[in-house]
Length: 124
Length: 180
Image (cartoon, rainbow over all chains, first blue to last red; front, side, top):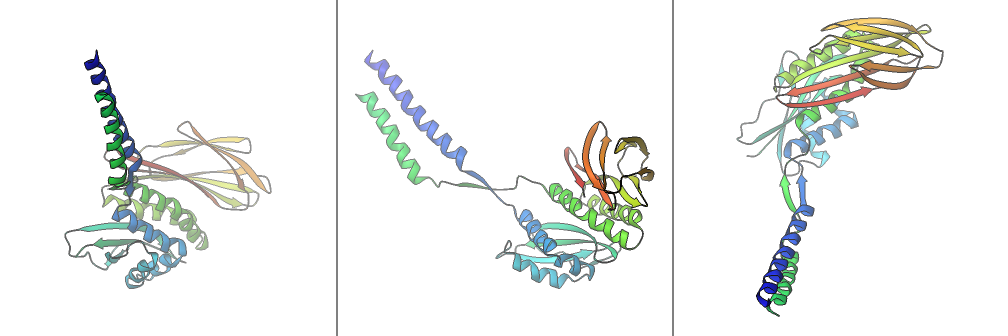
């Protein structure tokens, strides 16, 4: 009888640990945003400011790339910008093994001049 | 007594774990995909495209052209974009309801404007329209697309747009609606 009680109590002890660990893990898993998502957030900040539309219409990759740093999402990450219209692209794909791409489509500024703005984020 | 020590020991281990394990296990990833981002981008950009078209007196052509541009660009990333636009353009006490279907199946759109109902047929990559008389200030709108109804109140003197955006890549499908 005593041995059976010890068995029950040891099982209870094990369940206490397992339940606690399960609770700890289930409440502590969090998604950190992927690099691509951070890229989209950066572009969307510039889109909402209105600056992305104007720069994209001018095919000004330098201005967009510079403004990306003001969004605060890509601190410490390398990035470059390419803008493509229906026939050509300005800017180049970085030469890196690790590249993430985030893109936005813009219809134009005051005139219809559709472009795709591609933000490349990469590691050296 | 020994068994009770097991339980006390378990509680002690739990306390050690609580202070020893990092409270946050981080997993790099995202609950949303790039298709969600594309869909949201288009949901925000179709109205400006229509506005640019209005300013150049070619609202529907501009919208069609931008939709085609978007389809081609996202296809490069293996994404199939299908869009259905319903555009309401005011005109002298009436509204011109135009349907542009760039989905992969023909559609019949049920349009009810303040009690007047018509079905507008929209074949693939075509534009079709119907003109409704509307009250001076605004009108109640009901759209029926594949059995799903959308209700709204639109101003009679304003150009409005409803879009159904669908993106597919393999088994992944993202759908968004726009009414502006």
